Length: 162
Image (tube, rainbow, N blue to C red; front, side, top):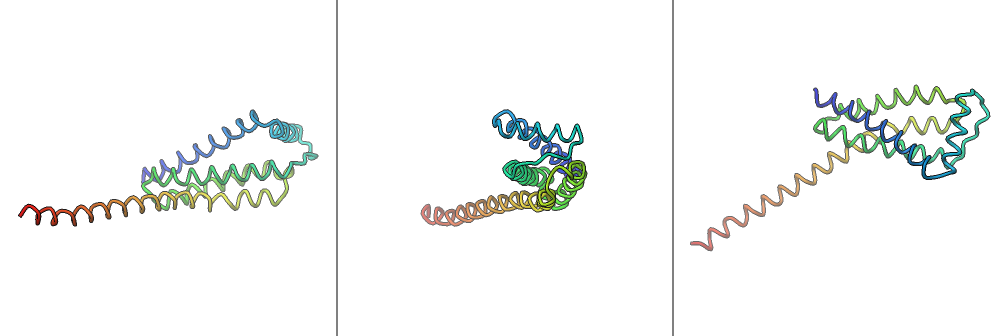
């Protein structure tokens, strides 16, 4: 149970770090993104409803969210020992916090963006967790094949020594 809770907490913190970190990198690296972001923040802080985001910025933000959700799903599964509860709980936590933040900026961004952003949080998190399960399955298969080959080679070596 502790590993499940730890997986959710670490996953949530990692998602937040990835979101804020990628925002910083994009703002520092791309002038167009920095310009869009500053206009967005100005609209929020001055409560002007005239902000018109570019489709590029919206798609980049959705992609950032999906990538971060996928990675933290894998991380939560790794920490929790692949427990499905941790992955689902993390996805639900991300959705709950996402709903809160999307509500705070609802009037500044198109409805389709909010819906897509929120809709993809849980599936992307679950997909990351399933990748962890799949990678363990591949490792288990390799170990099984290697041990089977070693066992098959053992009688042959015994026959040669006789």
